[in-house]
Image 1 (spheres, one colour):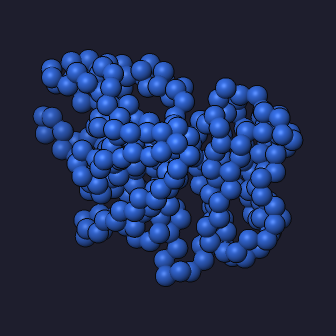
Image 2 (tube, rainbow, N blue to C red):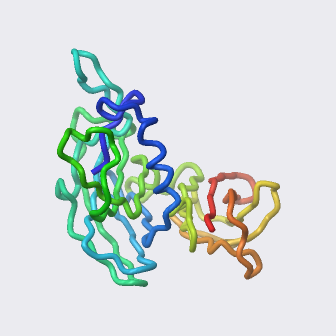
Amino acid sequence: MPTVCGDGMSDVWPLSWLEADLEAHRLVGSPLTITLTENGEGDFTAHIEAETAVSNARFCMVAVHDDNVAAYGGSTSHLPYHVVHMMTSITGDAFSLAEGAGTDINHTFAVQPSWNYDKMGVACWVQAPGGTNTSPNPYGDVGTKNHVLQSAFMETGSTGIPGGEEAATLMLMPPSPNPFRGASRLSFVAPRAGHATLAIYDVAGHRVAEILSGQVSGGEQHASWDGLSDGRPCASGIYFASLVFEGEEQARQKLVKLR
């Protein structure tokens, strides 16, 4: 399971001790893509697709809250992503998926009176056992670590539209996966029915692909970019997804394409 981190520390270890291991694994290709959607207050669905088969894995989903929690010596620690509710079992639910298959996994949680829904979020991930824990002295007896094959996170209220009403503002959600190799899924919420254009630009500002252009209804929309420009693979590097709605409202997100 992910470790608890706060104020630049992972338990008693500086987060800098873990950065090299994290960066190395960020470059490893994933067999999965995960898109997380908010259906309503406390109601979330993870859409998962497998590029290659996955077995003997676990799916986890948690609700988190921005909290100040008690720490050693009577002090407090700021945890921007403090887990307040396990939406799956505490060790995750058994997960497997055939190559080319997709699935939707839905979980809910009840908002407690002490929680501020505007300071919450939901994270989900698929993990598989294997490898050695690189954390220094991990409580002395946690030598095995799990590989997180793919993950997704969203703040509460990002896509939920209470009562079926349309969103007040245009929102372009973070791409998933990101970084990516094969394709990255882009989701956005239109404030009302209208014309939307979603295009990809390189760092020099050149348009390399247009992945959506046309009339959309109000609410959540989906598109994806396959990393191609006029049928040819784009070079690895940084790109930007630019969403224009009704020729005025704009939103952007950064994508990182891997080799």
